[in-house]
Amino acid sequence: MYDELGLKVPTTWAELESNSRAIKEKYGIPGFAADSLTDTSQILMMQNGSPYIDVANKKVLIDDPKAVERVQWLGDLMKEEVFATIPQTSKYFSSDFNAKLLASYLGSVAGYKYLTPDGFELGVAPTIMDGVAKWYPAWNRSAVAFKHGEEADKATVDFIRYLTNAENSVKFCMAVGSLTPYKDAAELQAYKDYLNKGDLMTQSLQAVQATLEYAEVLPTVTVSSTVRTELQRAVERVATGTVTAEEALKEAAENANREWAAK
Image (cartoon, rainbow, N blue to C red; front, side, top):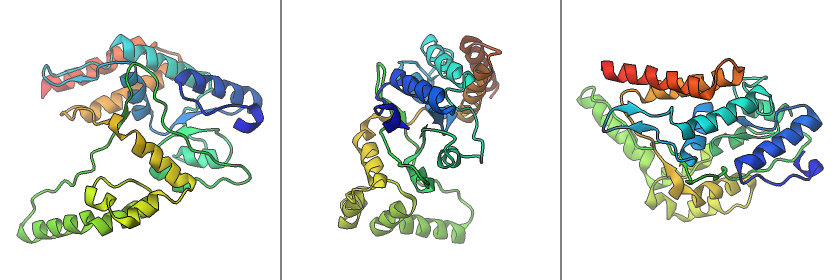
């Protein structure tokens, strides 16, 4: 579709919108979807310079005007079906993409293995970095263990040692399609060979590797999960056209702050 319409890989959100509108007009399908509506909203907000959570003062700030601007943009395009709202064939947009019901989507590089193009070519591109800040979300890859008893605790430690062993970490990365967070694993020749195969999978991994300096973990507080849920609900409400982003995010922040104050 990109080749037929002479489109280039978007490097700005405006270019993504333009490409998606062209695809919608020509093929009658959405040009883009967010595999995680919450994470994509966070990307848009943080790149626009919006605050998120004020940990010191225990206050959720997702109703900031800079967040409102980006969420309104996203919700409006979903309302127009220029961007997809929910997958049509399964719970994942990869299935819609395979079925040619969607032109592109933003998701984890580990999802590449679920893409099975039939009769069309597949391309990969880095996450768009467009705004006053370069930012995308990182997920904590540390091990978390809970005390249960001496025998179970020893087994837990043994498993963590096994999983974080350099050689095993490389095998894990190859199996799921990911980068290793461990320096000793990254220095192994097997890992270097894995990242230099030259296929689309490793091209996407290299794109992530090149921008890791912009990946950040948002504050983890007692209402972090609530904030994520409220943010997704806010965008979905904006996409229906029943509320504005300002109204939806104001209510979302109030709900999260009310819960936080009660803890």
